[in-house]
Length: 110
Image (cartoon, rainbow, N blue to C red; front, side, top):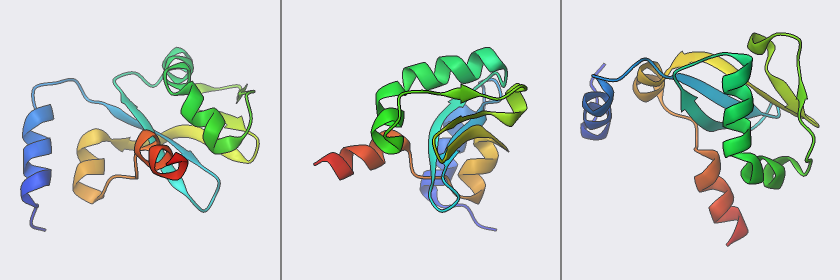
């Protein structure tokens, strides 16, 4: 598989940093990237949801986040599920990244 110039540039930019894991939100049809995080704990899930709070509310139409028992199970906002996808940032760049939630909602709100 040949990498594009953009992928090569992105991989070079992250090569000296800690592994980052992909946090996504999905309703079963659409999937968006919330953030990349170097931790996959319940606290990291909470912090990342707080950071992207307004975008999550705009997307889901709900303000309540229901956290599951384990961090690996993620959280829900109505019909939307927020969880660690199991991919690292490096894997996501190579396989194809999900649309970033901040970018998608900016376009929708225009």
